[in-house]
Structures are given as structure tokens and as C-alpha cells.
Image (tube, rainbow, N blue to C red; front, side, top):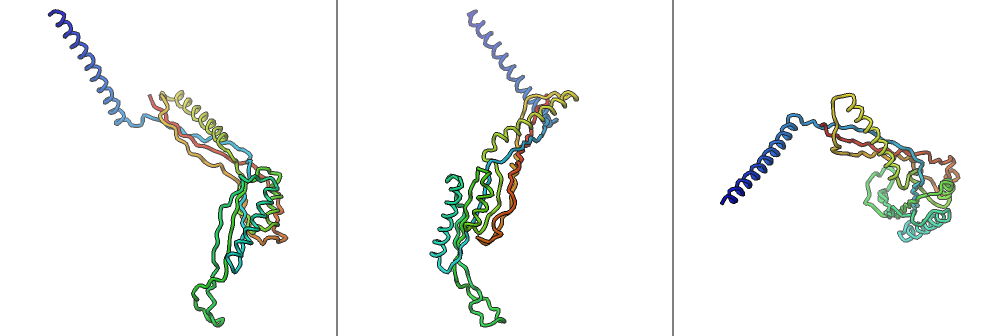
Length: 258
């Protein structure tokens, strides 16, 4: 009987202890929540930009073959022949098959809206009449050997490309450079956080969140040109130089205020 009483007393005591701990935990949690409501700004955030410069390792070029004729079959045949010759040319200059792709192939009818007019002062709008077809095939290539840039660009115009679109100097894999920019941004933030903590009464705790805003890479672009294939002025005269590209990342880090 005595042992049963002791057991009940022990069980009651342990229950009371656990209950007290639960009540205290609940009270503390509510205290912290109430404190956050009264003073919600218990974090401090710092932002910094990391920036690196790197030389591009590829040049991305788009060129188009534009063909017009009365028959769709003729347009397709002539256009495909020119495109194959251009692709053979860039391959001969070292451009890999993996770095060549067709990004546009559009065949459109050409209309005549004046066929029903009977004189110069007849301004009627005639029902559209198909008088031919125009096929535009655009091919994008990546040039990795920069010593071939000027030769390839000039050769494209000589071998039948009607249009060369924007020429972009790019970095094929920018992730390593982004990581360098991230490290630079984090180092700046750590220095600022340490300075604020030392010069004020704020005590910083653990990091609450990290957000990133990527800017770039900022590539240099040469504008597109349109010309008649084979024209004397078609081949570019200026030397094309890649320069450097900017890769930057902005980080925002939020710290807990103790």
C-alpha cells in the first residue's frame, strides 16, 4: 500500500513538472510572438553587388538566306541550296555541327493589291492576288575560334547570306564567374554586418534569409545589317574585337537581431 502511494506521489510530481515545463514553453512562445508584434523589425538586411569581368569565349551569329520566286517549290529549292553551301562553308572554317542550328524557316506568299487598277488615278484596293513566295531561313552559329571571326563574317556575305543579325560576344558557361561575383558580394555584406555590430549596440544572430538578383551577363552586341549578297560593300571592313563582358550578382542577406 505504501509503495502504491509513493508511486502515485512520484507520478503526480513528474506530471506537475512536465505540465509546468509545457506551460512555461507556451508562455515563452507567446511572449516572443507578442514581442515580435510589438517590435516586428527584429531583422536587419544588407545588400551588396559582386561584379567580375571576363573575356567571352564564343561569338553567336545569326544569318539569313532570303529567296523570292513565283513558285513555292523554286523558292524552297534555291533557298535550301544556298543554306547548305553556307553551312558547308562555316563547317570548313571549324564550326562544329553542334554549334549550328536553324532558328527560323518561314515561307510566305507575296500579294499584289493593285492588279485590278486601270490607271494611275485608280486607287482601288484590289482583292489580294498571290504573285510569288518569299522564304526566309535563319541559321544561328557559335564561333569558338576568334581568329576566324572576320573571315567567317565576310565569307557569309560573299556566299549568299542576305542578312547578318546581331553579333553577340558571350560566355558559354558563366556559372563559375557568377560564383566569384557571389563571393565578392558576401564578403562585402559580412564586412558591413561586422561594422554595424561593432559600432552600434546591435547584436546580430543567425542568417534568416538570402536572396539573389542576377544582373547580366552584359554582352556587347553589334547591330544587324541587311545587304545584297555579293555586293562589294557587303564584307565588313572593321576589325571585330570581343572585349570583356560584365557578370554581376546582387545579394541581400537578412540577419536576426538578438
